[in-house]
Length: 214
Image (tube, rainbow, N blue to C red; front, top):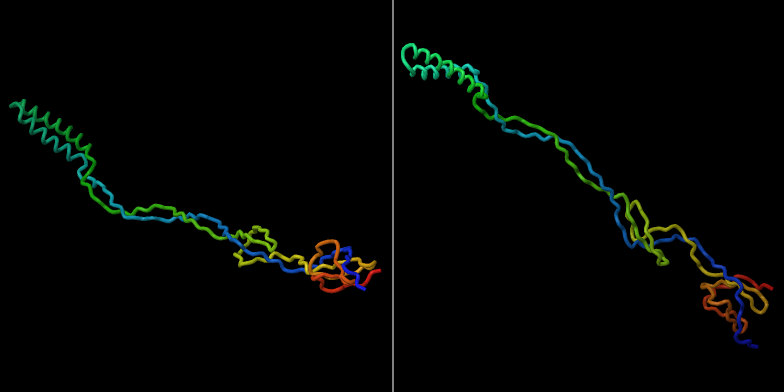
């Protein structure tokens, strides 16, 4: 005798899980760089033309003598007799003093050019940078995203350890006073399961894993 549509009460649902490696998809990478500067001293030399004045061999004697001679000649042109002699002597003395003064103001002999090697120290600053890691943005299988620092640049995906993956459900139900357990691929959508002509109806049922419980 057919009993028509009935329902079994779901008592318990136990997920069946297995450990599997979890991976995330890489959606972006950014290199992390560390900058540094290095200062290197080095010597720079160049040939430079400098001027110098050669010393005079006569010192200030030449100026004094020349001044005295010129002064004496000028004094000799003044007056006559003993007056001319006095004027000549006075002119010589005055000319010598003037010549000596002028000679003292004279720095030296002629100016000449010469080349000398001049060196000084300069410092060169060089900038450099190196990659110390990567900021990696990833997307998990459930759609969530995150960022992590890695030492090396990853590929298209990165390992995220292990996770419990649900492979099915052990569903314990009561029907007609008896308890049974059945393995289902999907979790029941409600707390009741349909029963037709005494048979549990589910398209996702995998197998009966338990016997009748009185």
